[in-house]
Structure formats: structure tokens, C-alpha cells
Length: 120
Image (cartoon, rainbow, N blue to C red):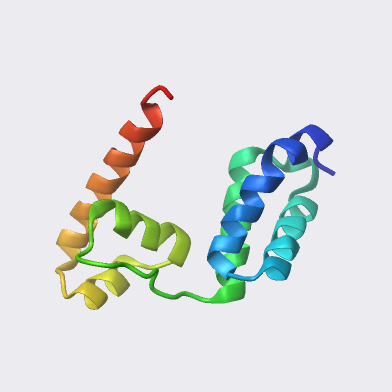
């Protein structure tokens, strides 16, 4: 069983992630609980995020994340992370070549990295 400290640090953020993906509080709570139980003593923050995301996507199935306006690099990263979309899915949805989608995803990840590195 993961340490209570790890649970205290991560549970709220994992629940928010699962809720954003599933759109259902009961399902989100079940997904988070399952992630902690499945990983047990092997759990760390990264593995919990991955397990929670994967389980929430499996529970909900893939769907395009709602976007208003044209796709931006960060919106495409959200569609991949929260919606489980593949490059081919995004390419078809937005009528863009896969090479363009890959380039935009690369740019989006670079933007996200810069944003996360900025002091708060």
C-alpha cells in the first residue's frame, strides 16, 4: 500500500485528472482508488498519473477534446493527454497532414516545458 503521505500529496490532483477525463465523480473516485491499489508499494507520482490517466481513458473511451477555434499546439497536447487522441485521429479531425500535427505537438510540448519551468 502506498504511503499515506503520497496519497495526501497526490489524491486531489489525480481525482481532478480522472474527473476531467471521465466527467463523472463516482468513476473518477474509483479510478484513483484503483490506481493506488494496483500500484501498491511500487507507486510514485509519475506512475500514479500514468495509471490514473490510462484507467480513466479506458473507462471513458477516446473522444475529441472540445476545442474552439483552430487547433493550437497546446490544445493538441491536451487532446492527446486528456482525450487519448492519436496523431492520425487529430490529423483527420482537423484536416491537417500528420507531419503538421506532429510538429505542432512538438511545439506544444516545448511551450508546456517552458511554462512549467517559469517561477511562480
